[in-house]
Image (tube, rainbow, N blue to C red):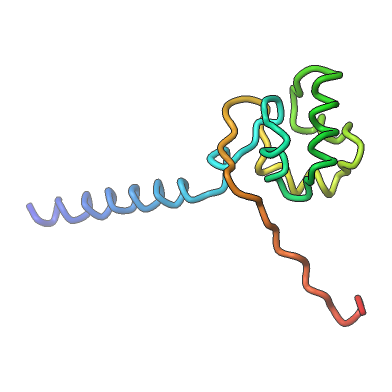
Length: 114
């Protein structure tokens, strides 16, 4: 009997560990809905300050809600690099759940950068 229970117990523990690891990922758990976010909420995104948050809101008001995250590239001041930094934290539906500023690590300087 113990020979049958042990593999089952190990399998259950493995499933629980995998489920717990998935919950720790930064996904939509920490997101800003660009269609409903306030200026303060938009400023939680990496690279977004008061001016850019204002341009995002102005763009949204002039053109209607964003259908895709990629449409942020049409906002003045958001290029490909900026969009890629924001992408993991931006959604177009649901609630804004990001509560603190995202601080991305700065790239390390190399000898050739100096």
